[in-house]
Image (cartoon, rainbow, N blue to C red; front, side, top):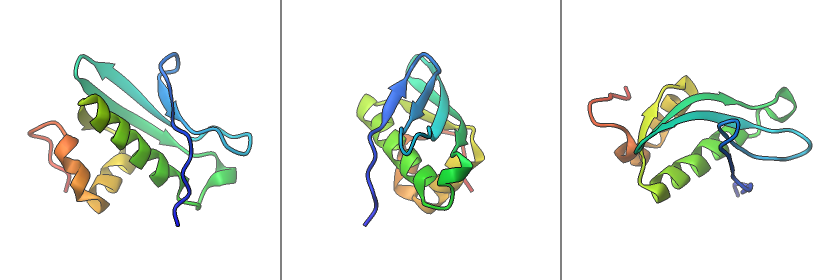
Amino acid sequence: MEETYELIDNPDKPQYEFHLEGETPRLEYIKAKDKIYLTHTEVPPALSGRGIGSALIGAVLEDIDRQELTLVPLCPFVALYLQRHPEWKRLVLKGITIA
């Protein structure tokens, strides 16, 4: 069973975050009108290999969907996640191809 973590949108940074075990995995973004550009995913080494990055991206995509934003995935890890979870490609800006 996949663990669930509380997603925090920190617009001051601007990034989405999980807070766990004293660490802050994060997904940095730029919002512009109705678009969100996901620019960088970072999971602290102490938490790597546990699927936390994927859980973070999944939670962020749910939030983007809820806000009806258009996704522009600039982060390679986000693009890889979209390849593995094609159901989320519907959020991606038209004209952007995720191989």
